[in-house]
View 1: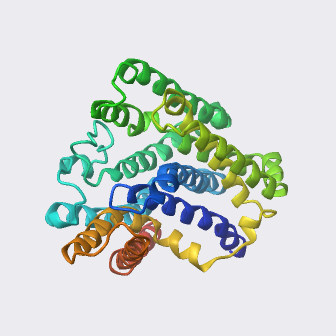
View 2: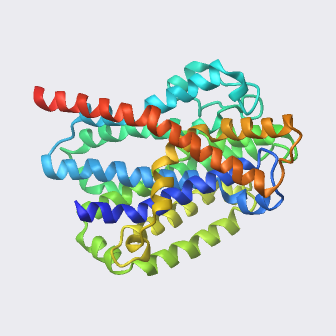
Length: 374
């Protein structure tokens, strides 16, 4: 039990970093200080870090269950995911669809696309940009649905021994389809037009099949940590080296992705970012790393609030800045930024105590009944 708690400190640091990156990136869509444009421009990689974390944590749980029990309980897995994801998500949908003042922009995608977690396909972010950040939740939900089924199918076969190779192939597949999408849809578009960005987001940035790098990297690390003793020894003994290697590679990734919608960045950028965060994640779970050993109440709390803050932050920032505008207060300074971030934290706490904790109690009761039934 102690080992698990200590191990999570490093991952808490990464979750906190991921949500801060996302907040800075999305804050650029509102009135903001000038420095946000330069610091926050790479904040989009926070989502990629979340993907790597999800791939690692979810696959790690499933691999441990396979190792200990020889099977996967789909019912237990899906119930846990349902109570973790759906209540807070549906409450946010309620806010967006019932209270227009919560919307950071005018037009929403159809409700059915949010409810079915398919909003990331065909998303016209130029004209239907409200709650557009739900695209990443769509990818994660599709991942939660497919991964355990995929593992159950290949468990009795020889393919299970080659999951590492399969994940590398999955990442290669994403690279390939991005290259094809670029050549077919993006290359001929006028880079100065809104149509270019509409196509780029729709064909390159949002679809699940083009964004499998981070999830694939996380599953790859989760598999190797469970089944390769050599890999575990390398990770355990080289934590700080892995951190500096990952950070250096991330710097190179940022340089390559300086023009986010360039061909090189579009085709290879997501893979480099995923690899960088994958190496940093390996540092975070290594007993020899300062990330693993350092404890922080702040990052632990930010990590715990990250999902709720991710869901609600655009609506909250919009409301706060709307109030500032109403009272004719400055909205482009650092003070407003801090107030908006503080409001996002308060929003996350509201979600925690009003939605997440009650549903967590209900989840425990449901799982207890299942255990008694079986």
